[in-house]
Structure formats: structure tokens, C-alpha cells
Length: 157
Image (cartoon, rainbow, N blue to C red):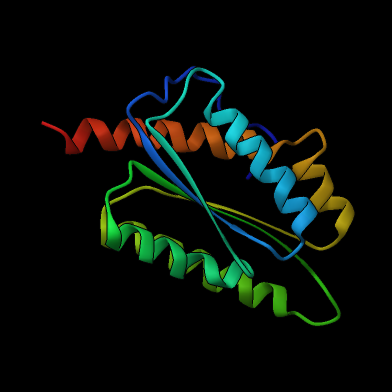
């Protein structure tokens, strides 16, 4: 994401069923991200449903979203995680495979899936995007509401 997000639209979440899958790895940061996302979704009203599930890490997010989408309909799904570079390049593998899987799920199920997995080279960069000035959580919430609105427009008669 760039540092120049789209202008803020005020979307009423009423009627939307939104599912969020959040990783437990880097728990404090993910918890802050989840708080920003849920606050952003509920800023202009309550959705019909806001369901949150937890998984061990970001690699498990696509599996949980798939299980949820197979079980019942949602207007939009959001996957939240924080992947920070360690001593190896494992973070690239996790980020790329999870991102590709989320896109695949969206196309297969015909439901918007927001990739809210923050991937950074260091803790400072992650904090800047979650608890700092960049506020990716609010951006993920806005994207989810806009995509849920689009989903409802084109799937309901």
C-alpha cells in the first residue's frame, strides 16, 4: 500500500456480514490491528454480523477463511496478520503464499477477501503501520466496507 490512501468514504455497515481471521503470532501487534479494523468497521454503525476467529499464524489465515466461506455466506472477509523479517527470508514465503491463497479464495468463492497481512523488515516498520501514522487497520476496514457494498450490489436481486 502506498502512503496516499483513497479518500475516506462513510459506508454504513448495516446488513453486512463480515468475517475476520486474525493470527496469534506477533499477538500484541495483531491485537492492535484487529482493534483498528473493528473500530473502523463499526465507525458508522453496526454490521449485521462481525465474526472474529483466531489462528496460530498468518500461514493459517487462508485455511480458516476457506472453512468459513464453505460454511456460510459473508459479504466480505478480512485476514489479519503481522509478519516481520527474522534471520532468514521465511517472511517472504509466508507473505507471498498467504497473499496468493487469499486472492485465490476470493476468486473461487466470489467473495471479497481483504489481505490485511502486514509484512515488514523490522518491528519499527510494523509499529508505524499499525499503531503509528500509517494506520493500515483503518484502511483495511474501509476497503472491507467498500467491497462488501460492491458484493451486495452485484449479488443481491
